[in-house]
Length: 518
Image (cartoon, rainbow, N blue to C red; front, side, top):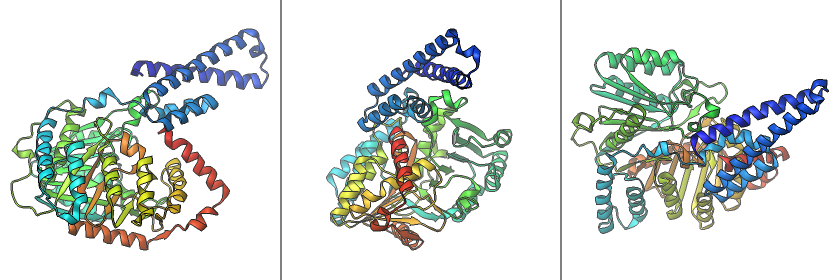
């Protein structure tokens, strides 16, 4: 559906809905003037227009949406409950169409990454870089080379940053040491205590001559004050919004969000992971309490991949191309021997790279699959993979929050629990606050840490970035953290879960109804 056509449909639907609502409200109260044949004819006319809108929306969903379950769900809601269907379509429905605009994000400098990835892929087909005990790694590395040009890097030093205090301390320290540039890209930035600390540091560095560039997501930062952005700009920081949304109801950009959290400093130090910028990520939220999360600090060659992701996004939002000169490349020195691939995905990609990587990890596991995710709404293939692995004797454990930060996604997650428990998957609810880490560890030999959740929106619609790591020490730390989180969680027992309250099942059904529409 063309952008203009869709906006006309939505605008006319809103106007029609308002007219009909006014008519029926007044008609219900027996206002005499609205009992006339003229006004009844007007109401019938607008009702026809509204019905036409629903039919057209249904037609475009039918033609362009390739997922049968989502197509059927949309058609049922639109025709059985048209008013609800129309509202849901405004809020959620416009992600069923891949944007030409997002396709424009593919830039010419991708060719260099593609050439290197092709060379490495050919190398991996001839040489067992790992060993016979780690065949999964070879498959995973090769997959990511082919589906996302995720260059395989070996000269890296990794540090697992557990929770907000460690993460922000490391970020602040790195920003203070910046000499040439600071690149920051975030889904959420808040104008609170830690947000202002970061802002002041960025302003100080910009005024000292360091090039500071910031990308913020327009929807994720809806509540960010204009003064915050003005202060940054006046200090010399270059700031751009990703897919700006001025009128959310009429904007189809609403659903294509930049969920990435990236910091690159002087081309040699990089950060990626689950934490946004805000006090709640330091555990200061009265509603959610302690915030359990995982971030990653990288030094070395893998930072170049984070840099490329940022520079591509920067060129897209600012229309400014920054050459990959020596100042933006990691310094040529020995950092360590940690093996890393940085993988980005989004609606501009040819493949759902992170989703495919998750599927490869799960389907190839031989001993254990340990997952931490705030949202457990996996696609059918991943769901089948988890159940099959558990039924095959693989130790599959999943940690999810006990608290809800998003109503429908929480109950959609709850809806999948019983089916997974029946297959032998062990599921734990985190009790010590809110857990937001996005981690998958398989067989103790490979892991993913990043921004992508285990749900449809994250893996197919949002712009995401994950680090896939093949480093024994880092993975040991992740496994240790996972064991600690298990200790702070309560296992969900199948017999108990089956006896949950009846209205929980109603809420789960509501989550199930909405989840295919996303």
